[in-house]
Image (cartoon, rainbow, N blue to C red):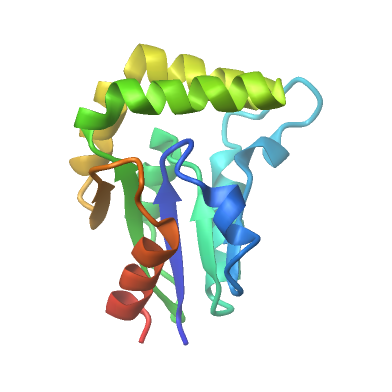
Length: 161
């Protein structure tokens, strides 16, 4: 089976689902910091790693940073990578989504979850408009009770088999 890259908006459940679905890997962008710094071109090895893993037949869940989206659109895909898709909530879910991210941050206390919350507060609408208009196939959730596994399965059936 071919691999797939899924660019997932913050809070969709990438880390949670990766532990439940075999062959699905969450590539945490936070691992590309060195101490308190991240190089300006951090996204290049990040995206290259995602594509390399996907080329081995895995479904790789990545961050939705604009530089990641732009890079994934600009490079030829390796032979065994079926495609790159985006998964995100619809704009109608803004208040619920920010509440979800706030609850996650209050539960974990992690700095990365705080940054995700602040980004959504500041730019949720812009983020979703940019993702939906990026030119890649987009799978959008319209309700909080979505099943990410079902969306991943739909994308894999369409692109990988």
